[in-house]
Length: 321
Image (cartoon, rainbow, N blue to C red; front, side, top):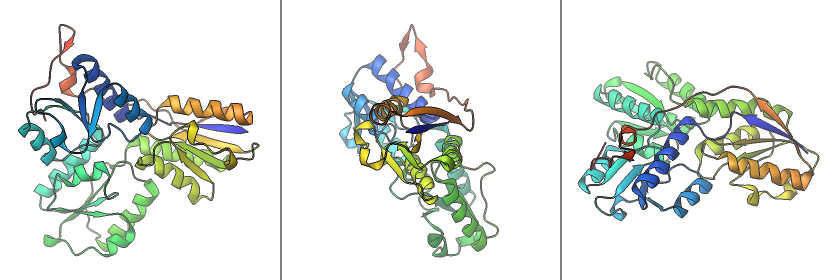
């Protein structure tokens, strides 16, 4: 077996920042540290943090008053922030800055009287947080067919935003339909789909041209990981999305294929290495790196985590936004 190891792959800057926040919170405050939703959509990462005292919740009623609470990389709505203040929770905001950018765009357009079309996946944590910024001004679409069902915007002003982890091709198809229906539709000066999502998709699109199969490391609830597998399948290349080596079915392979291996933006390199070792042991695989773009993006820790006094992290204020 010949493995083409795609790069860029794995953790993006937003995921690194969110994980660093939780690492620091556990180290300085001690467990339990509560996290609203999964810190990132990756089973391996979440299970590791559970073992160290992180408690993941979907309802702030499950968080005792005055506890340390971390908002995940996917962002939260203003209503969740209000409840956190009400419960006197010490909140640390680990929202990816690129998600925060979309939230600010939603607020801006709503204030200016626009109907906002959000292109995204219903039920995704990021979508729930973004729609919460302007619930009375926003409508969600998932396909060009959804665009066809839209009503004419009240007042004639309409704009679109996108979830940051979408397939670039899927988003482009929906945007094209939006522009056909609403030629004057507004959009942010810089697109919302994040650099890491685009780079990982580009790597799969280019490197998979020489592959017989694609193996994507990532969890089933990871939107960006799902998109990587979909891109390969659109080119009629078998693609498998797995959390780790234990989920690889040897019957997927003859043993003499060329296999592209990549990882979604929330998948750690450790699981990539474990899968490569499995394929070496089982199929005598050799690994050839394939890099299509360099990444050098870093996001600073949120302000709640940057204040250190005497070597000890200061407890964030109750209800910090």
